Length: 397
Image (cartoon, rainbow, N blue to C red; front, side, top):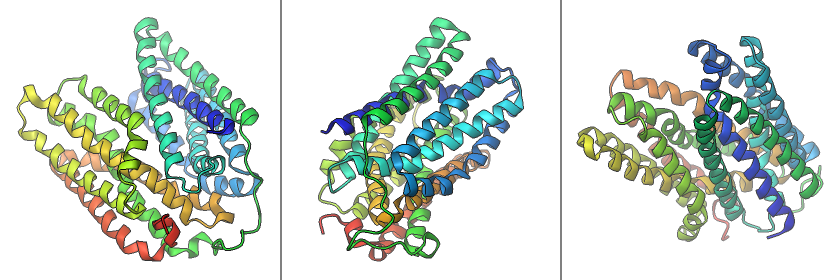
């Protein structure tokens, strides 16, 4: 592994450690430290987050113009400024500004991250580098969340501010590491010989369809993150510690299993692996809903076991989806294409809370919606495969 790649992994680990420290505590910080009502805090963060969704078009052009490393560094510095705004916040305007900076910085980050990983990686096929990055980021985020719990236990309310300051510092350190220790090729304005030339994303219907299909896949994970606490605590009356244990288990499996999952599915095309992931998402919905019939003493063990199905789906789907999106994009316009691809996951983040709200109608309804989305994504992906570049669908060709 090259020095630049090791430095990149170290920078991403430090970045995500800081994110794990504070991001899960954002609303609690605003209600306990800034002392905003929960409804006001939630609305302010949502407003800033929605405004941050305007960043991908700018991010894509910046990546193609100045390169992904510079955009990732900018994104980390923007998030650090946002964290400082949270630290100084004493009312709604500053909270909205902080949420906007952090959301915009995160969008810049995700829009440029996978181009940077692809440029730094020496492998022709990017599935494994993406899987390794997933492992490092997931493990670091989980470690940050554990340290945050220890900070709050030891420091009480002051622990929130310590976590916030540490988050800002880790972002700056990560940016410095990338600036000093990682180098990437200069952006080339002209497409390489033999590489598909960009025709304009809005005219590239197969890639637009890939974004739509991926949003259906993304709904499963975002529903898991937002909906499982509601399902476990409100619908099933489970113990209060269980949602945290479920998330910790998912993070742990993701941290250690990405490359193993890649090896086990190496005989599949990227479309085949992603379709397998979608089938596992649908299975997870069915077995999760079956928890309503599980006796209360067995509920924690059952739901923790069910989480392994979700983890397997993520391990199979995640690295392949990013590799497919990167390979299907024209090289001269990868920044714009991969930035637009992030809308698949941003839209899922917006829709997921509305799906969770369907629990108020019937306990089974959200599960049916998410399972149907996973099945529709699998069908759509297989129909789309012949229209995508063959080397992107099956790199063995």
